[in-house]
Length: 84
Image 1 (cartoon, one colour):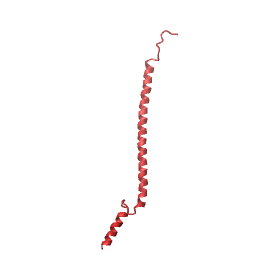
Image 2 (cartoon, helix red, strand yellow):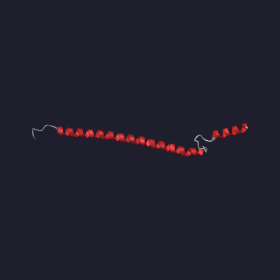
Image 3 (cartoon, one colour):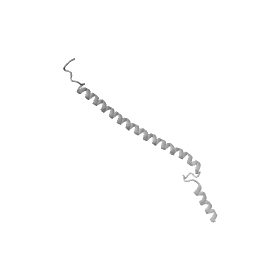
Image 4 (cartoon, helix red, strand yellow):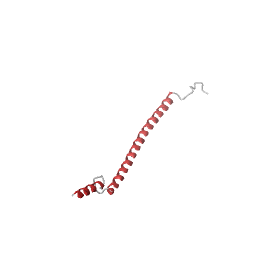
C-alpha cells in the first residue's frame, strides 16, 4: 500500500456530485412546472367540452332561440289575447 493515500475522491468528485444534484433539482422543478401546465390545460379542455355539450343540448329545450326558453313568451301572448 502507498502511504500517501489521502482517503477520499477529492474536491473534483465533490464538485461533480454537487453539479449532478443541482441539475437534478432544476430538472425536477421544470418537470413539475410542465405537469402543472398540462393539468390546467386538461381541466380547461374538459370544462370547454362540458360547455359544448350543454350548448348542444340547449337548442332542443327552448325553440325560441333567445336562450331563455319558450315558456315565458307564450304566456305573455296568451295574456294579451285574453284582454281584448
